Length: 210
Length: 210
Image (cartoon, rainbow over all chains, first blue to last red; front, side, top):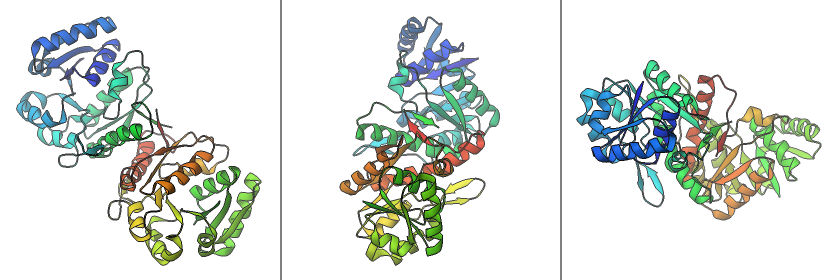
């Protein structure tokens, strides 16, 4: 299975690329700029000793079975509209949290949630996940993540594939979060986690259900 | 300090009464019916070997410094309006989560959140807390809770008192959740936790931030 991490040059993309490659997946890093994708792929290869390919976002979504959209929320809907034809055939994972900074981060979703807005364009194989994963810690391979990862979606087959991907990453635990409409609750928790950490003098926080 | 647990005859009330008595607080159980309060107080005394008093809700709020409202959400605003004069002088804690059952539990807040609706009546010494504590497990003294408890409020002194109360309970950790308006996020997480547990075949779930 080929997993493309679209716009995968940030912290979450790095963590996903390296950890999914270590789990045995064929990983492609996508970036707007082909050379940047190739440079990052090379950098991540060195970190984990696995093959990771770098391609333009356009090529990355063409070749994949699953596309994880680690792109800025401001560009997400335009990107999805532009590539609707290709993306609507794939399982598309949204870890995207739309939020604005005004006296702390505030959740700012388009029509319900980002995941639902993407599904309105692409159809029911959109699954939301990874929104609450602390990206910087996750990008550090010395960090052993023990986070729970909620997976929401309306297509049960697509959701099952994404849950398997989550569970393949050591010490992550996938939990079925129900229908895609629950993405609103999960997305809104991310700015709250950020401000909770700041307010209580803690490092970047993840979630565990106990 | 006297802590009254208003309507404290359910699972959350039981857990709070026993664990706060063990932590050294003077605990009063309130109930609509005086005899029920006395019977429950006696039952809880036997569990923990501490003195716990049972009084009518009216008397319980009169004698206390801090009132924790473990009453059904449907009655909460009427109760608060009826006892506005007494309650507005106290620190009032809302663990209340308004939710309705329709294909799983759905969050159903009056004007933003229950905690804010109560504060609209009583003023700024309203603090929200304990909403995400799994009540049945918490009521079982053999269960060692390792939950994080978010505390939201606009009056920093009142919030500090409640955080100290939370932290006095063994293995609970209080986290400053910011202003009372964040109660919406915390309250909405409870029905999600319930459905998450059901959907994934897990026991009643609590939260840890890691």
